Length: 328
Image (cartoon, rainbow, N blue to C red):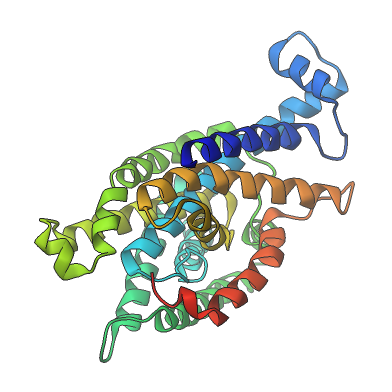
């Protein structure tokens, strides 16, 4: 069932990729899409339109998979169903540090400010965990979500304070801040690719450890797991994936929240399957949302971050109100 379902999801993802390169201000039929991708000598307007959308589709695959896996990892190590790079302020931390780098150091490409994105994401995650863990008892999902909301508000205020006196940066940053994958370039992705790869390698080996952590810290220790080291490695993977995505596409929210929950409803609580499915379902959701954003306001686009917010906000409310999600 799980393998067959994953195969069907892969087929749906291939269809979403075809829609992503074929649908836009100019819609291209499937036969011409195939011709454009397989025959470099074809130079029609339709072929050029398809080829110009290929980097956007590849970035959607990278960002969708990374945010979904990052959300699954965060939910696993915190045992918090509301954990998500956007809700916990991780994306806001990366964005704030990137803006500071753009304003005061003059950085202007994803390859240059990825290190600041990683530092901002890591500091924001650590601060949210420290605030959410304060006081008596273990950190509850609601306390971590509230700490993340406060941290995101503070970091967003800092970002706005840096931007307001710099009118020349406002327009470009507003586009980036909304979260989008249009304007993607392979040279920008190449500089950030090592961060995606390191995060992905760490995530591959996290599934079994997360299953042990789900039994409780004492039981996990009894099974021979180093709880502290495991949490640190998994957190590094989650932060790297979220920061690399934010550096390239801006702070896109709710992918890391929605996808792991949707996947668990199908495959159960085994984190090895949750992570494997998230790699496929995350980019599927993001590419479909991106295509919807291109269609509803033709010939202009609605950025995918805005479409995801429209989808994700009601899902977040449902999760908060549902007691079944109180604890993983």
